[in-house]
Amino acid sequence: PPAAVECRLAHVRAAAVDDEAGEACARALHELVWGKGLELAEVPGRADGPRFRVRVVDGVAEAKAGGDSRPTVNEQLVERGLARVPGASKHAADDLAVAMRALQLGARAARAGVWRYGDCDFSDDEK
Image 1 (cartoon, rainbow, N blue to C red):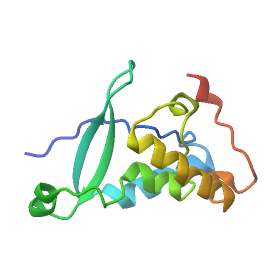
Image 2: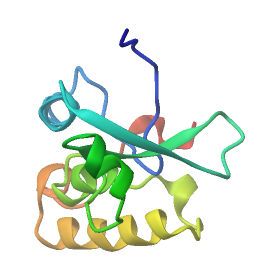
Image 3: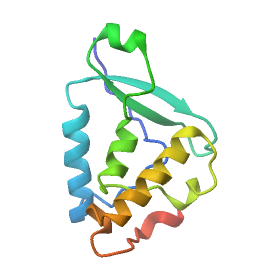
């Protein structure tokens, strides 16, 4: 039977849910993953627990086929400006972190989501 498992997205920082930007991110996350098959892959390098890259898959055949051309949920949230790459991932060298920093630059330039007023600052970034 299906079971819920807590999971943290790698290289993603979102505002608190009680904030307007945090609520928008939570709604987008819900739309992206609710009721869909997910493929999780752990991203190494965090001492505070595992972090994952998450892809939505349409079925078992697609999950087995794999293929990294599908954007991750992590990337989609950052690309839309609904979340950002935290300072702790600034020097991460894995392919996901590199791709997400580039997507963040695009969202920032387009002033999408949390970037609409310029630089954003989440108070819990130092944690």
